[in-house]
Image 1 (cartoon, rainbow, N blue to C red):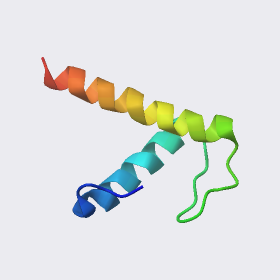
Image 2 (cartoon, rainbow, N blue to C red; image 1 turned 135 degrees about the horizontal axis):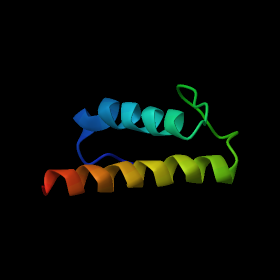
Image 3 (cartoon, rainbow, N blue to C red; image 1 turned 90 degrees about the vertical axis):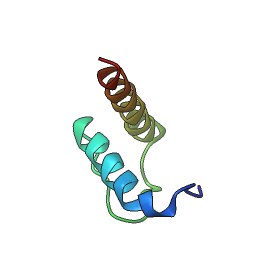
Length: 60
């Protein structure tokens, strides 16, 4: 996946690592192709949940 804003790559990586930690998935730096679909989906789902929460809070 190509980032629209290359400078955001590190922030997105930290965001992904934080979401993984919140759902108990141990991500490594670099390749994580050994994750199960359930684990990868949990990380992605947590990222979306956090984005929605952040957006809702910004509307207050």
